[in-house]
Length: 91
Image 1 (cartoon, rainbow, N blue to C red):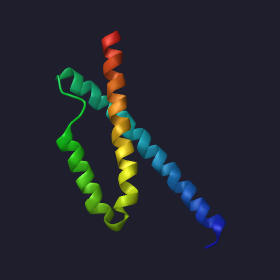
Image 2 (cartoon, rainbow, N blue to C red):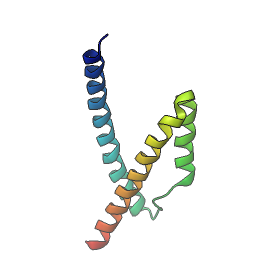
Image 3 (cartoon, rainbow, N blue to C red):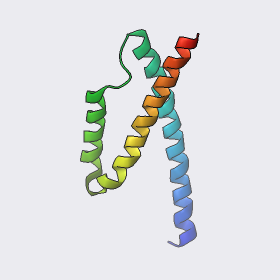
């Protein structure tokens, strides 16, 4: 494989990642509404730890590279949930 072929593969992977991230963000908004309706807090430590434990187990030696990505995803999810809450208060 040459550089151009590898870059095309990376571009395709990036497209898939973006699609999956957007789906996850949509789910975060839905979860925010469910939590709000049920009086649940945004932060769920046990859920977050379970996600990070699975990431560690599944990523093996790449964990130190994958962890920051997942931490950012989790933080973004919490931001979206907070925005949904703030929006509900304004209504």
